[in-house]
Amino acid sequence: MTAILEESRGGKILPLTGNYAVAMAAKMARVQVVAAYPITPQTSIIEKLSEYIEAGELEATMIRVESEHSALAATFGAAIAGARAFTATSSHGLLYMHEWVHWTGRARVPIVMAIVTRAIAPPWNIWPDHSDFYDQRDAGWIMGFAMDNQEAFDLTLQAFRISEDPRVYLPVMIGLEGFILGHTTMPVHIPDQEAVDEWLGPRRQGFVIDGSESLAHGNLAWPEDTEEMFMDIHRAMMEAKSVIREVDEEYYRITGRRYGGLTQCIHCSDAKYVVSSMGAWSGDIMEAVEKLREEGYPVGVLRFRFIRPFPEEDVAEQLAGKKLVIVFDRAISFGSMGQLFMETVAHLAKHTGKLPVLRNIVAGVGGVNVEWREFYELIKDSIDRFEKGGELEYFTWYHKARR
Image 1 (spheres, helix red, strand yellow):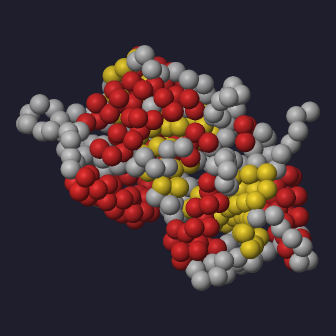
Image 2 (cartoon, rainbow, N blue to C red):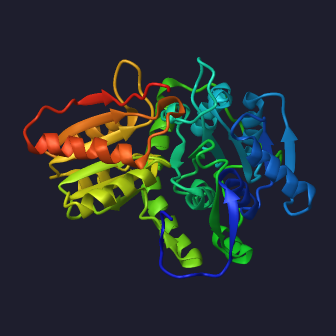
């Protein structure tokens, strides 16, 4: 389990896939409107929510639309009218939503959307990497990513509280890898509904368009007004850092779980070398790091839980003064490097006077499986070569030929 679980706060343990964990969180948030279009590997989230509604376990309206573009448009419409709304998608469905992803972020409408990540075609591919998720970085959404099914549940539930905070009022998307988490069953602790109701409270948003008064939205604006509105989005995004940390602590009081805010750092305090990552394979990296520490390698792991807002203060605190930093990316910005690496380096340079030796390893693209032993070898080889004064590639692609 990724969270620090200090004591039980009641509730129950259920065996849930990552997709069902997300659906359970949306149900416990008492969403009022769900709009979605099926796409692998997201579909079972919406199927499960539909089952909850049909069984009378969730008092919500399910809107069946003709496309992903319409799914987010309908979710936006419900939210702007004051409903707590939810949707989910993957890959090309997310790309089809892209216009409304920007519209929703720039309209400052609280919405939660799950992204069950999957590679973007061509070639046609249903396996997961992070390319679809990274593609949304500039749209004004808070973006969190889970490492396991428990965190997928917790992040989704926390996302409603974060999104609806008056200091924020921004939509939130929660990522989890398709199949690796989405269709794999793990034990998930579910808190008591009464505790969740009291903690989450009624929906809040900055404005509601319900016909009760005359309001204009989405109309033509002067360039200076547009710029000011975009500046407000950025300020809200930066304010969200404090909100995310506060929500993490509040959530601890009802569940006994806390994650540490925007990042989680394992063995960083005494580490000379740090490995950074995001997503499910962070668990494999942690396993590799534990093995290396047993062998005397002072190495730690900085796991990103959020990339928007980007946790630059955590990066500066945890990576400054280290000898070697290795960033694993499960996507590539073609013609450049891995997205997580580029942002890490930029913010580390902003906050520190001297950069450590840096290495970006892109791997797992298109769903290629990378096991903990391979991480062990890649990290060990990098450290050994560094300590011997050997040359380290600034960027490399770890490719496995198909057998």
